[in-house]
Length: 254
DNA sequence: ATGGCCTCGGTTCGAGGA
Image (cartoon, rainbow, N blue to C red; front, side, top):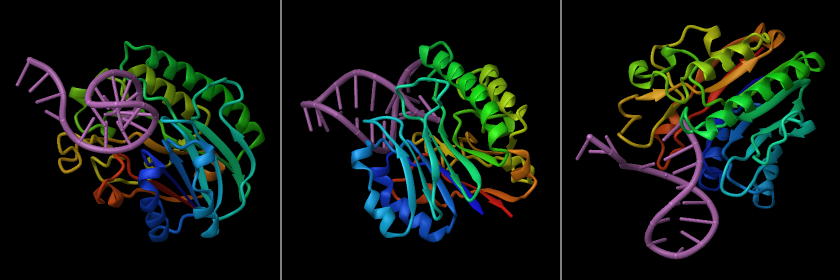
């Protein structure tokens, strides 16, 4: 079973790229973030005509998440029931007896902002909810844009980024705390090339200069981590015309 | 020295992203 995640930065703009990527990469499940699409405008027919099952939760202008699956999706839940939130950032469902959670963690803007405080509270709420979910769903994968680079090796220039949003200690502690639930960063189960990132700023020719961060992750519960045979970041779509600033991450579960 | 780009909404600029 292949599970993937991709922050597409507008599904409307990137729909043909999503379809192209799915044609090139026959994954079982693709989690999307930043669809920026209200539910009434979601391109349901496009995916269904290709045989995909879908679940989505969107809003106007910002956020929005979706799951695209080759297999039926059951028990769909929108957002975190323990954390009332106007913003549509989580959707989950069960696919082939795996609980799949698609998450778009708040960006936080800057460490001195209200949005940073919201991000930390949001992550606390996520931790509390995942602790409960893992008890009822031992086979659980949470994929998405975490907006956290877990360690300095996930940052192109740790000195420049030190203490800033996306790499600050409190954010990293929140990420580590998810690990303490026995959720494993699938990417780090394997040897990886140095300076492998999942996001590059649109400015400064950042992609060409590989000035990126690894902020998109797939966390697996222990039974899934034990069966995980690969986790890769696919840089190809970042090279396409009018790309998302993020690129997909794929985990293979045997 | 600063900020550089992209998307959206809604009109041509501000907010938000990361």
